[in-house]
Length: 334
Image (cartoon, rainbow, N blue to C red; front, side):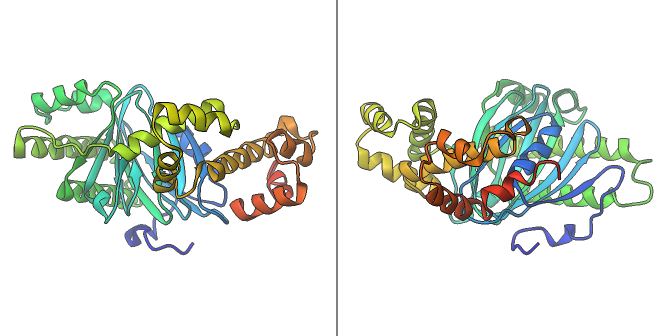
């Protein structure tokens, strides 16, 4: 797999009893595998063409670590499980948790997602994410964590926070790389508990340092454009594919048609009409991959999603996903 953001130090990590090293040519499959971490993932491919993804995942114990790559821009809807905190560090520009990132600002960020958090992330093409997932009790009950830091984590209450912390973000990335390298050692299983405790304590100490620097945590605020987009997206998904009604309701709630189109272009690099088509193409793709719908023809499914011209649908579909609808359906059973 050719990409510019995958961490070179991870090239030689092999699958073993602890770590899984996986490659994907389908973003639905990528999201489905991640769902085994106990969280709910739904991916939509915003970029056009063939998909290439990669995942290194190691469930150590109370701590699990992963490094994830995708060559396409993705819209990710995620629901965090009820018993864990998730810490995300980006390897390139990204838009996550309601925050627009430009000029590599996101390289300086640690994104904290508490238990039961729900968020929409828009990641750019050729993006690598480094992730630590830590059980709530293992973090808040860690002997190294300061009481003030423990109280701060407990106060998040489903609300994600983005922190601007360059050195500490790099430290967490380094901890993930080292931990993955440790999993390749002969005695990895023997020292699994020790590695688990070390990672949990490292997270606690990093946030202790952040707290001691300012006696508070400096969070990055979401831009107004991002907040507008999230409001529009929610409305859009409620009434799509009725674009006329969407424009009518959105202009009443948010602003002019021009502002709506500028907001979509800024956030997802396309207007509402193109965004609607992308959603309907994804709906069709899900149906093509549904074993219970094998008897339904590709043309009928396309029509259900508002594509009445077969040749145009095929063109749109192949441009978006890099394969024909028939090739998608042929994935079933592979």
